[in-house]
Length: 287
Image 1 (cartoon, rainbow, N blue to C red):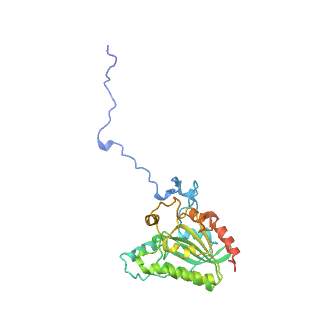
Image 2: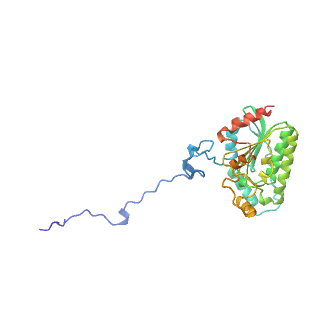
Image 3: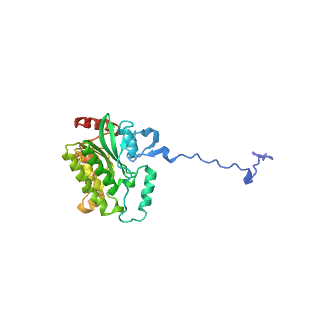
């Protein structure tokens, strides 16, 4: 007798495609739900970053918009914007430049790469400028230079301290030599403000490079920086190819600048408001 016997009946499955169960769609995860930290490479739930946008694992500070910076820094409802509606004449008639500007305005809600106005920080009035790297990398063109110059002129006239959060990828190439002229223009306005005996505080954020670094960003009476902010003039590869030597790994980072005396202090984003208020109080910011 065989060990195994064949059964006569089996369960049969209809092979027709129409009767097969269709695969269920995979749940979609919104792109903005998680972020990868450039510092520790961890995947972070957006809500865990909080309003300050700081990695809970390593403390890396994500780039934030001018409006996010504004809400973290000034007294609620105290900001009054100045110098709106200034537009470039597009001196070079650079291809697609006007279209790009229109797209950036729609994306960021800003009219240019810097937000300027007056505000209160813990009751102390100041002239405030916040650069936004989301707007063509906060490159400095004629409008950015004009708004910053007017901010210092306004502060000089009204005897106000200036606090400026810097961020930039450099000069705006679409405006050619006109963009480079803004370095001298803004520096002259800073000097007039300084000669009036008024206080100027800069906060270097990631990235602050090019002509902005070579002008008003490094001209503050006190210079603060956020941790790990990239701060420099020329790019790392350009410098290495010029001097023909390997640069330190932390070269052009805020910590490197602090060690070499170019920055007065590195301040955590959550502590900046208090630190700025203290410095304004020391330097007569409540006048």
